Image (cartoon, rainbow, N blue to C red; front, side, top):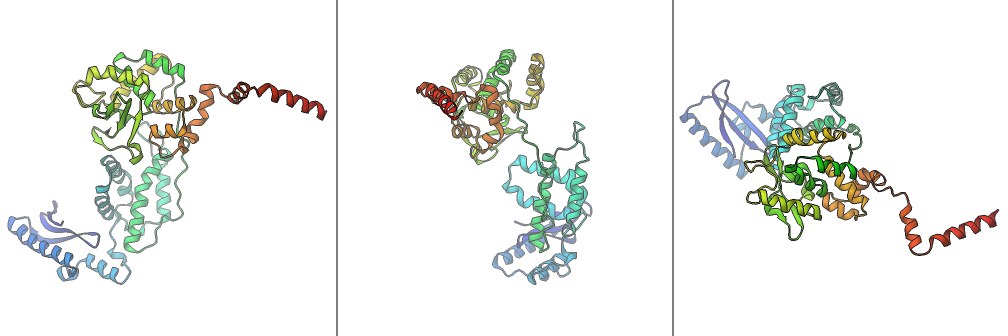
Length: 402
C-alpha cells in the first residue's frame, strides 16, 4: 500500500509505493498542504490500480525519473550503473522488506548493525560497486574495533556483523544483475562454545549459599536446562505440576515477550522432583500472577539486574570462577549425560534438533563428572560372570604365546 509522504528538509511531498518488488519514491515540488495531499492521493490510487491490472507505465507518470531508466533497463535484461541505488538507500529498502518476517529482537540487532557499522562504511557507495576487496578490508577493520569491555570484537561478533552485509549484497546482485562480490568469502573460524559447567559439589554449594528468595529460581534453571529468556518468560499457564511438565512457548527478551529462539525450541520439558518441589513453593508466592518468577510488580525478572545482584555475588562469595548464567543450561546437559540419560531425550529437553551438539560440545565433560573410564563395561561383564573368565582366558593365551 503506497502513501504520500513529506520530506522534512524541503517540506515537499513525494510518492512512496512499490512496483515489481522495488520501493519507489518520486519527489514533487508540491508543498505539504491538505489540497496537495488529496491530489497526490488520487494519482497514487490510479497508479496502484494500474499496477494491479498490469497496465502501469512508469515513464508515463515520471518521465525524467532515474527509476524509470532502471525499469527500462531491467526489461532489456540489464541495469545501468547510474540507476543502481547507493548502499544506504538499498539497505533501507531491504530492511523494510525483510523485517516483517523477523523477530523484533533480531530486527533490532540488524538495525543496530546497519547504523553502527555498515552504513557509515558503505553508505554512499553504489551497492553494485562494493567489491570483494572492500568487504575483506571492512572485515579487517572490525578486528581493530573494541567492545564496551575494551576488548577486540570476537570472531563470532564480526561474523554476525558481516551477515547482514552478505544478505544485502546478494539480494542487490540478484535484483540489479551484477556479480555477487561475496563469492569465495568464508566466515571467520569461531572457537568452540565456551562451556564451563558446575561440578556437583559446586552446584550444591551454590544452591546452599544463594539468597533464599532466588534458590527455587536457580534450582529450576540448573535442573531443566532452560535458557535465560525461557525461564524469565515462563508463565504459570504453561506449568503442569501434576504431569510434571512445562511448555516452553514464550520468552522474555529486552523487556518484551518474544517467541522462542527457533521452532525446535518450542517444546515440553519434563520436570525432576527437585524442580517440582521448587515450583510448588514458588506457586504459593506468585501463583496468582502470570509469570512464575517475577519482581514485586509481577513483571519478569531483569536478567542483568539478577546477574549483577545475585549471580556474581554468590559466585564471588564462594570463591567460584565467574561464569555466565547460561552455564546453568550447560550444567543440566552434562549432568543428564553423566547420569546416563538417553541423548535423544536430552536433546528434546534442550530444544536441539538432534544429538549432534550434545556429543560435540558436552561429552568431553562427562568423565570428569562421573569418573567413568571403561569401568562400566567391566562391571557389566562381572555381573554376567564373564569378567574373571575373560581374564583367565587372556592369561592362558599369553602363556601359550610365550
